[in-house]
Image (cartoon, rainbow, N blue to C red):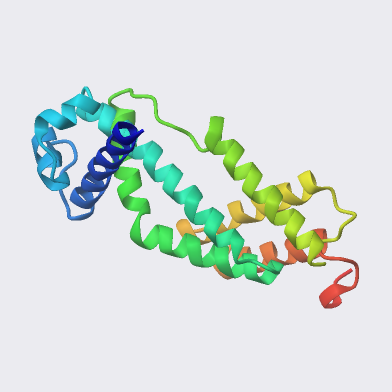
Length: 206
């Protein structure tokens, strides 16, 4: 157990080192394992005990980043008690993501794609199941609180929430959709949440 914990700690140190180096402007295509090891405070030989190549490190970085983002989402959902809380929290999260981490993630993804490497996807496997579980848990909690109509099916409510968040991704993470202002995307998302999920008559909606 101790060795496994030590392995996880060292792998995490390597992933975080890569993210720091890229964030500080290092050219990922020229980055050497020796530089990663030095940044992580680990010997180069030790790094090769866990990873066979820089590409394997980068694949691990991608999985680590997705796992970290899902942990942030779990924490974010835990403090949401209303649909307004959800909207504010998701907006805050996406704004922070695009301001501080998204570009580094894109850099890693571009290198892996260019090398023909498979990369983890949030839409598959354990990551998808974790996201679905988090959203379903949020729906059930908001139904108990009277924020989401108890008559609405949990699966449908989760679909609505995810659909609206995709709209927010477009609004906050890109230049938006052609012909749409960011404010309009957010406003329409809010209206969709209210009309599809709130109990009849709440906040003046039907």
